[in-house]
Image (cartoon, rainbow, N blue to C red; front, side):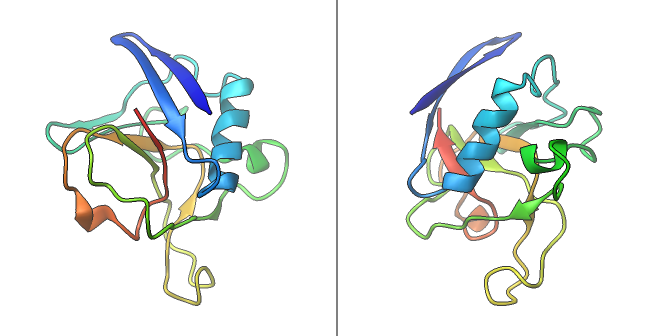
Length: 137
């Protein structure tokens, strides 16, 4: 399954990893459906690293999951899949908000809301195991 994301600098087609990150993909698709991401800026761009968006405040400190928008928990546990890596430019992953010590056996992995990033370089393997990879541009 793919999603077309229109930006002021051109379109991004994101192929989603629905089997490996089902809850994250559903969150992303539902936020797209309600136009949550429309007109949001890329609030963090670091050359050779990432471009990050998904915060309606534009500060990097806002946003919530579709579950929060609908009155539930604002964040949900990261879905870390060992086969999905940050090894290619264009990898799409959820940014994390803090850590959830109860997630994944107390290892302290982050929780996801609405913010996501696209990698701008290959071989960013130090991000593996910390962020949910859910797509590829």
